[in-house]
Length: 315
View 1 (cartoon, rainbow, N blue to C red):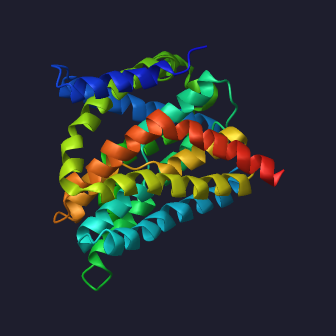
View 2: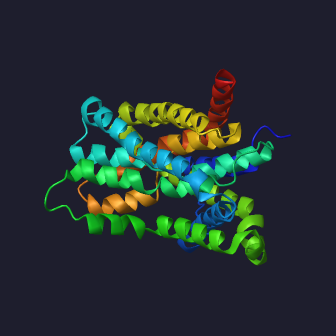
């Protein structure tokens, strides 16, 4: 068996091509199509499995995951604000990125587990959808504060109607409504092609990650250190929570991966609308240039080992 999953090699190809400035780039329309297909596929899979689960058993787990999504940016913010000496808006924006999730990282983690035939709870995409929103709301509140002028309606509307949220939640509802039998006619597009779509998506993500290297040079070592250490610390929180929720080793590893990932789609769009004074280059340089690259190349196997270790300790 090869040491690396082929989808990771596609990412490395894109990263190398970008660093070497090769003339390689997917057309924007193709990248947009791959993003839509990836988001819908993950949502549909989660919805199909959610249809099999009793809501009463799922609700406490869902609430615990939402709480984690709100606490992670609150933990990241003072580090960025006082140790990193970022402006309030920039610290809040970066913190929101690290409280939210990366769909691409999750997809690679799922591929990693499937490649090694490791079991995990198939309803994990439910947690993926839930973790999109809390960090965005917390990030906006950290940047703006709460006062009489706070428009909760506009804030929640911007979050709920973002592209990734609509596609993930919409796919989840469709999968839940149709169930395993109803989804069969479209399985070929959304399930069977998943790995190929992910490989092409990661090729483009490697090119984009390479484009953030210059930003890291300009903004010093702090973002590099934060982009490496924050996911490691957050993964411990996610792994411990997974164990407390009685998830399998694979499920615990996926929750650790979600906690360790950083958004580069939903949160940048939300911050651009709600906190326009924040510098998006700082957030993307850390979340995409450092954390995404680290997670895909080294972090995911570490989170698997972490999940195994916590389950051994906990019996």
